[in-house]
Image 1: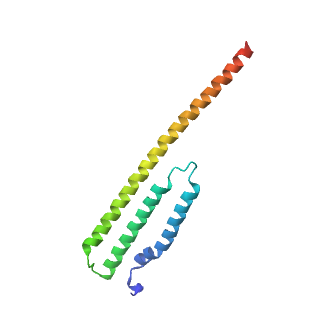
Image 2: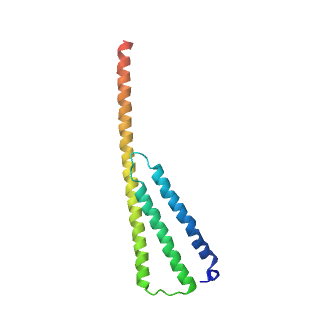
Image 3: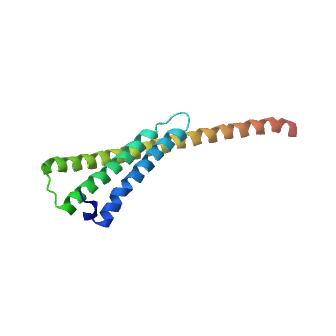
Length: 135
């Protein structure tokens, strides 16, 4: 294949894939390394979303390369199915990440409520200890 036959922006998108994949691997590794204890599973919804987004870009580039070079698909329905699967996986990953973020926000609110209750109890005990000495 003559790579010079591709449009410059399409070629740039192809060449960027390597960097995007390296960045994806770095994000995933960072998520594992920085996941707070106790392990809350942030890794999984993020990894699925990032992977689905990357897959969608690869499928779009593949389609654009074929269109640019005038290559007809042997099985267009398979390619359309692949695109549909990619979109469905991306939608599912986004929904899973949203559910994770909602659960995390709910957990944070519960932790903050418990912390406030503990602080209020400590303040009440401190006030109760100081009250007899003032009298």
